[in-house]
Image (cartoon, one colour):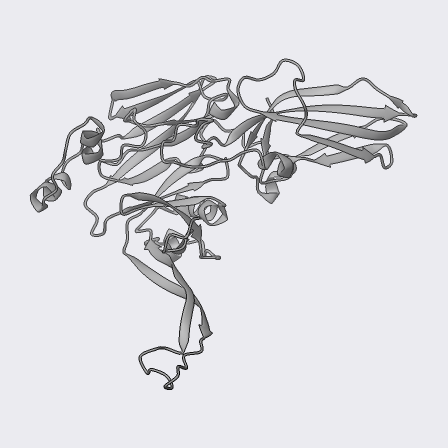
Length: 380
């Protein structure tokens, strides 16, 4: 089935001799693909033909129906609205020489929150099984991996520790909301440490300096060396590299990449956090019968709040990660796992100088983020 990447234009064209006009109905839905046009269209578009041709652009309309939330589960569900794929049916009804023709139906187009680059041309497909660009992953020691794959294009995913097969996942789903599947070493996708694994199983963990020192040298997940994505007799291998005991606690940034999938990216270097406040104030009348009191301020605050931002340094990455950082800066959805909370963020940095080993030697990126909320809770 064809793919619609909703952050880039997707065109529906039609041409025939003596074409007067065309009505296009767009049906957007989740669940199993429809065998025939069903229900009421979300959109009905009507346009007159010019030189016996019409062209509709529909991706922006479809994007409004894809919630694409992230609750750190990596398991798309309708209830949580954390899915990022839907099905799209179209019905095109042409009018030729004043007579309405039989409708032309296109069923079960798959729509993703992805995009294509200019050099990919119109209606980019991103038709790879692996839903990320890099085939090498750097992660902290003992952290889980989560890799998005296209279930329609992927037969199975095998995760190896050396020559030992740790996990063998067969991918299959016809439901629209499950067209992206995330695979990992641990079957519980949101578990990321030994302590989280213990707490998930109902144990209480008392933190101490000795325990933290012990955990720094413990590999609770097997030391994964490779992930193999298999499809149609071909395979793609992703190499995994653990970074042990960095001087700074690594911070995980999750963003939606060009394929419309969530992708984890770790920042291993130093970080700094800032607070910027904003206020509304007014000048009050403080006079009394006896004059005024010096302790009663004339300038009073009506409201005051603040926003926090953080600067992260990536640590040293291979040159192949230039594309990953490019997609991070282009992403509309970014989250930072910070101090045990998954927090929405906005990439504040607006430019990126691509680095290479020849001129830059060690490649480190410094990126600024704004946390996407006010510091004082004002949700009413």
